[in-house]
Length: 397
Ligand code: FAD
Image 1 (cartoon, rainbow, N blue to C red):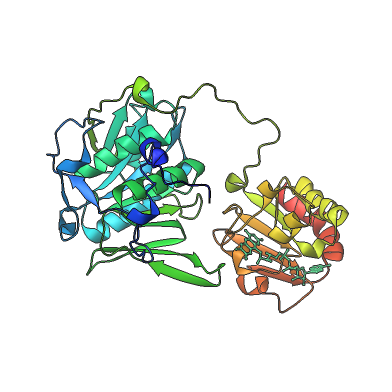
Image 2 (image 1 turned 45 degrees about the vertical axis):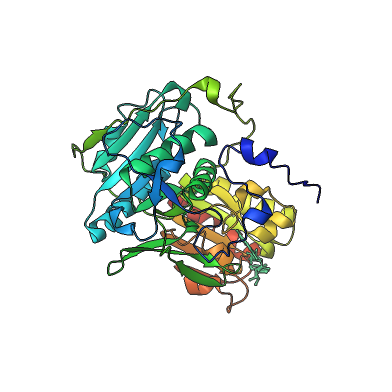
């Protein structure tokens, strides 16, 4: 309401995501981008990539989709440690690339990260695009997007996959906007329509009530993000080799709008449910905070498990949001998942389907969780869990 349409924000937006309403009346279809006409540079694949090359030297994208080839995975790293989700995506990326008969490449950006590429070949990459530059030491939307977009414009991949992490979500959205292409976020399955060479990106839609398969027919690259632990990590092949490509970029700290002043690590207990082997999760059926503490934390402590929760338990204030499992919480893939007093709403189930074994305890024999679980116990958690505590402790701890 306060906007006077002066346009000042458009000039300073680092990801060129803003436009004036009067200049942006295009309709938006599902899986397709909003906004400007897609453009790309017409440069040879071995040329240097100047960071400030203007986009006006571009050719039209539409009708030219066949030039885009290959599957790329963004290799997210922090302080030289690769995020496991990137390796998981190399696994599914390998399957997609094989179906298309194209190469799988990893895109590794950072400072002093040269050397990490060897592990990526072992996880399935045929090629790694490595940009090693001091300016890329910490993730910043501006720099990572600038470099990644240039790589896309030069090497023309048809598919880009990223982890749906804080970084991946930010980068993917910014890049899709800049490249004027479609992005499907938080996919739970990826496949290829080999006839049309389309990425089939499946994700829950309408509050999780349906699974929608989304395609991006008219623009390239096709982009998708996937949450950690949704895809299984494939086994590495020791000694597998690949090709390293090291494009040169022209980046200067002084040209950037943002500066990293300090990294402050979060204090307090870190909850890492994604890597937990056993999770004891509780829902509204635990009655109150005291019941949740006694049953959930009690069993978890006895068997050396981590605690998780349904959204109902979080909203009741029995436990913090960071413990929430499901569509708007974390996706988990433990060996054993205990669902105690959890009904099994679809939004919860999408977060636990990667579990090897699901054990559910619920008083209602019709609860949807019983259709998904490996072992179901119809009964009161306050009776069942104390009775199982000792045998489970002996078996699991
Ligand atoms: P309820 O559905 O109320 O189930 C409680 C269960 O406990 C019942 O089945 C009952 O039979 C059983 N019970 C009661 N007493 C006992 C007892 N003494 N012993 C044993 N069993 C007992 N939910 C999530 O969990 N995670 C999410 O990420 C998430 N995201 C959402 C996103 C959207 C957009 C929306 C719309 C919803 C989301 N939800 C999410 C909410 C979800 O739809 C459910 O409301 C929620 O999962 C229900 O939690 P619950 O199973 O603990 O509670």
